[in-house]
Length: 53
Length: 257
Image 1 (cartoon, chains in turn orange, red):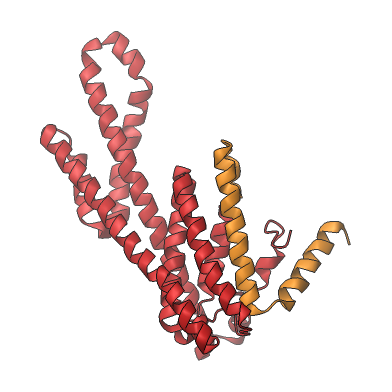
Image 2: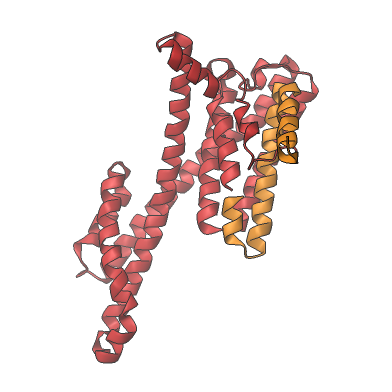
């Protein structure tokens, strides 16, 4: 098992153990992170990076 | 932004309208609008739009956070009205934002379409001898039901005009008297591209709405037992009572990184 597999296994086990509301909150956090990254990428002129985030 | 769209689609697909009631409908509207806005931001690279989205998601996230703090342990599709009664009332008020956004967005889209029609009509008054495609644009703006047919009609003239514009410098050198006509072409091309951009956003919003409807239909079919066991198993995999964990398995979505 490489590092990525371990990380995914950890993510899955964390997701399973989290309450349903916690999962929704985690998804919202991820959306917020993606949007903020897109803002940063557009600010830096990296339009392609912004759309693939 | 692609990741954000995927996640919003997942959140929208697992809404339960029967248990969620008005809050679920508001959330559905919120997701439809925000998906259209994310797509719009992807096309226009608008920082204002993205910052607006961050603000909206942060507010709704805070509402969910308040629900979670009260120890609600229900399906991820559940909306606050299914949670602890005291949390439900407050959070439903928060989620009413979704309904407000949807109504605002609808007005904005109607405004855009009206503005497109108005601009087209104003242009027609200035250039009464223009080709019939401009009339078709105005007709499209007035009648959104013929969207795909109109898009095809508009795309034709735009594609025809592209090569002409590419050779415009050479044309001008050889025939300077064409300058006025070329300027007119440029203006028409700009109008058409703007209209096409608006149509694209509208189509993407409609697509998002259809996808959400499809997800709901699949789930209802599964609940009613009107599908074969094999199909049901597949459906349960993609539309279970909890947020499907498959989304967490995607290597490109690093939730806990």
